[in-house]
Image (cartoon, rainbow, N blue to C red; front, side):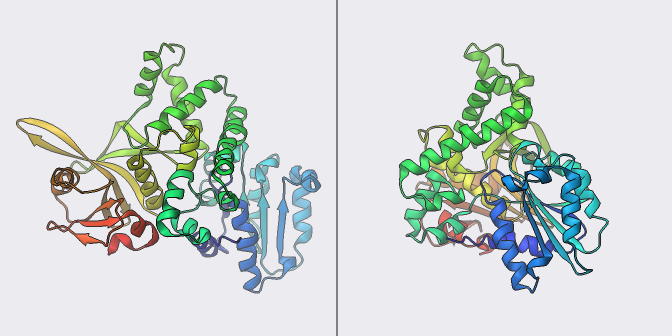
Length: 412
């Protein structure tokens, strides 16, 4: 089955012939290699590029191990450049090549090459690679399947697809697995044999049991405010005094650098400034989040929040957690807005709620909005499969399936 990944293909097409190294990053098994070949290579061929002007090297294949030597790989690629027309260089698992930074930088001086690279482990899995190529690269961040991609691929009823998605997430290989046991085993094995192994080996992690337990703590508290200090206190309360705040900070950084989790900062809407004391963490895929907890904690409202966050960043928004300070009986109180989404000169305020069945719940969800002084659009996303509607205060209420399937849903 071919999953087109059209939004990512468009980003690759838009970046063609720009004199930068195109770096496809993201969590392992999210489809980086598949995006470049066959999806992008098929586009090149359909655009009239001949096979001999597409130079692709799969560096993880045994027959190409000799090209882990950068001099041999450079010689091979340059030998494939046969004329002055544009050649497209696609290097999969580039981190396997020693001193690959110098190799790639050398191609930037050639006017007839366009370079695309991916990596899936070691340092390339980390965001460090973007630092190495700051000003010389264009990052294309790829996520697991969105719900829309998942639904179109599964070809089942919408509500059934949604219930499957909030449990198993959108890792592309899941589409080909037929039963619950196979899906859960696959996701668990990704953690044990792929993600944690890479993080431990790359960062020389000594307390791998702490890394696992910390990941579980983050997974069980998605959508909740936390900090390295609070997490350290959690260990101390359980008698684990050997876990220092420095260890917690380092391990959180390892998990972020591996794209497993994302740290979302708090933003004071009225004072227009960030608050650094606490933040929230979300997983790159809710199926992976559920797997690390052995599918035991299925709080749908938190999973919904994680899914909405991922959809917002997929759509290109810069996303923060918002707070609005209000005064009550001579005391100050902070009200939370789940997400503040910015895109150039546009902003949206988004709340996520399972339902608005009671007046009390409606007041709770709308109250932060009513204390925001600007006129940017305000949206509440609910679980209910409803038609979009507006409250008397002009707040859009929309069902999560409609939100996920309609890319223009925030502008209804």
